[in-house]
Amino acid sequence: MKQGLDLAKRLSNARKIGVLTGAGISAESGVPTFRGSGNTTAVWKGMPFDRVSSAEMIREDLNAVWEWFDYRRGVLATCAPNPAHRILAEWESEFEDFMIVTQNVDGLHSRAGSKNVFEIHGNINRSRCVECEKRFLMEFDTVPHDPVACDDCGGDLRPDVVLFGEMLPIDLFSGASERASGCEIFFVIGTTSLVYPAASLAEIAKRGGAYVVEINLEPTPLTRSCGSSVLGKAGIILPEIDRLFRKEVLSQI
Ligand code: OAD
Image: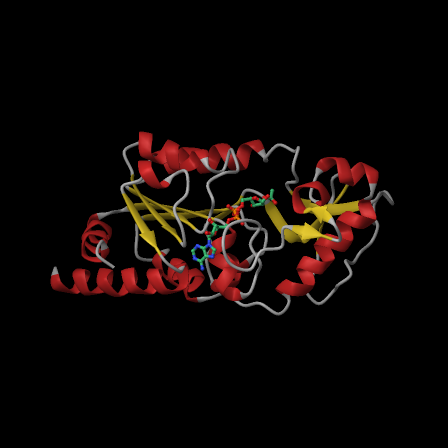
């Protein structure tokens, strides 16, 4: 990796790091991505994923939405964090300020040990009452979802994730944006950078003066404007950057 030494030097001098992750970081854990190369689940029972994952479908066919999400929860039950998740979890204690903003709903960053995670698209193992908004935690092994109805008001439950046609939780996103704008280095890992407003975080970080590093299998719309683009698998690239970073830190002692 030709940029490795430069990145290691930058990391060893930085205090504030931000990371935006997308489906690609979990690909090596066996979680299918939505788009791009690799193992994708773009269609579910003949429906494009952005239709079955839409606000409209909650109103039209909640059962179909649950079938799709229960299927994904079942897949996740067999998946574990990979080296990319683990390195990011370790980095949390290496820097004064370290945050992860993830578009993933799979909870793998937390399972790897990360604490400071903004799950801006929600979490697949939570459900929410469509009437009173009460939230419920589920376990991976409760597939299909459980409970099936709100124990307070009896309302229907839906996955507690952001669907197409819905707004992101405003407080969560503005908190993540504010932190992004103060970063010195901002990593964008395993995302097509097509879905907004998540994709705008790299622009916000860059405007705030951050050096933006993209790690992806292939170029994206962000590639031309970022400081460094590293093509390859996150689970291989991040451990390599980490190795060089630790060597650099030792050489400065
Ligand atoms: P996508 O599925 O759109 O893109 C996955 C990206 O990861 C692609 O750019 C791949 O090239 C890259 N990739 C795949 N394997 C990789 C690997 N091992 N290492 C590094 N990169 C890899 O996923 P997102 O950009 O996260 O939203 O999608 C954004 C949002 O679209 C999702 O959060 C979801 C979806 O609609 C909601 O559900 C609200």
